[in-house]
Image (cartoon, rainbow, N blue to C red; front, top):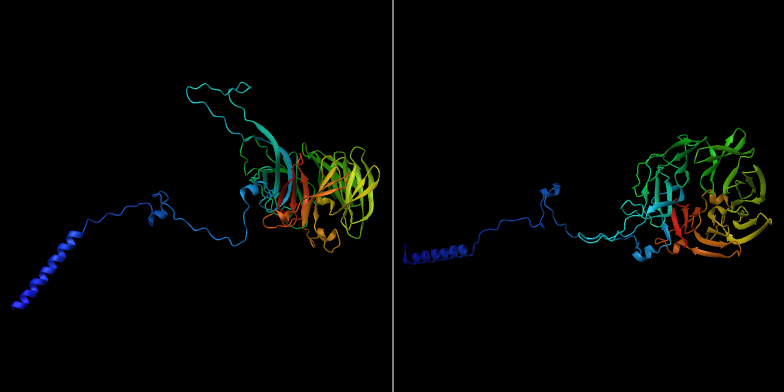
Amino acid sequence: MSKRNFILLIIILAIATIAVLGYLSFWKEPITPTDSGTGTNFFSQFNPFGTKTTSPVATPPIDVSGYIPPAAEEASKAKLVKVSSMPVAGFGIFSKERVRNTTPPILPLTGEVNSIPPAKEGSGSLKPKTEFVTAVRYAAKATGNIYQTFADKIEERKFSGTIIPKLYDSYFGNRGQSVVMRYLKADDRTIETFVGTLPKEYLGADPSANNEIKGFFLPNDIKDISISPDISKMFYLFDSGDNMVGTTLSFLDNKKVQVFDSPFTEWLSQWPNSNTITLTTKPSNSVPGHMYSLDLIKKSLTKILGNINGLTTLGSPNGKLILYGDNNLSLNVYHADSRNSDVLGVKTLPEKCVWGKTSDVIYCAAPKLLGLGAYPDSWYQGEISFNDQFWKIDIKTENGTMILDPTTIVTRGEEIDGIKLALDEGENYLFFVNKKDSFLWRLELK
């Protein structure tokens, strides 16, 4: 080997030795990986009992609907609230006892003197404070299930599991413990009417969602139903041979009493006060209508109004006043004692109104504008739908005050065609159904 090649070999070996020594000087023991809770463990995704991991922060989806939820303060002050989460066939209002929501007392620590006095009953325990508040029950159109909530705090809860599909109409009586349901049989022609009893609730207990409704059926093809003011009875009309028969049914003992019989079959009934049922001919734009009063004590039938085209009516609780409309939807009040009528200056149908319990005011859902149509037929047939405002009308002064225009406060600008208006006992709330979609609403009045 030449001297030159030997020197190059020495240099190469020296460089290699320096490189190896440098690598060894900087090399360290590898660190065993541990689960810090932030990594991804494939198998742990399928192990429900695995190590708890911290979920990554998710980016919320962008709402492109244009809906802006109201602030909490605004929502709590809302006068108009949707009660039901589904279309309803009918509803009932009643007073219900509940445990008052109060802050529990602070119990003394061990060794301290107990400053909480025993209950007066001598039981040694505190008796829960209760209150009577307004509650509402309603029946879902699709299933016939019963739901309920308190009026001051809307918390919808299912109350029954009995299925009655495609429910058309429903009524509640006996403080919400009885329900009347109407629907078509499988032949899509025969009207079936079922009277059911709801199970009782116990104070403080959570209501069951699977309660069974037990009851009985009324005759087929009942034409009309109305509920008494004290909601303890119902009146129904049905064909019997060539006549129309009217019968009362007590929700308390199921006792039936026939109180009406007529060869004329086209009647609509109302039960405005305990002793009187009103009967009005079914309205049509070009047909003169008539209204009669049925005295349940004397069993007498008296004509009240007649020869009014498109006549629709609503009797007052005191039995002295009749709210009625014609084919122009002009609202009038008829005074039974003086036989005079007053024009109220509001255009709507009486069935879109409700009387105050003292018969001095009425609350109405009145359309902003009236389109061209043959009233009331066009509205009944669904050819025309209204966009209502809510009014309070003083009968003595004939002055009207608009309570609310729903489109100004409902976030999505929902239009309402109000039907089945009803007041609670204290007239603090006005409940109604929107004819456009059959949802139940609550309007706070005070």
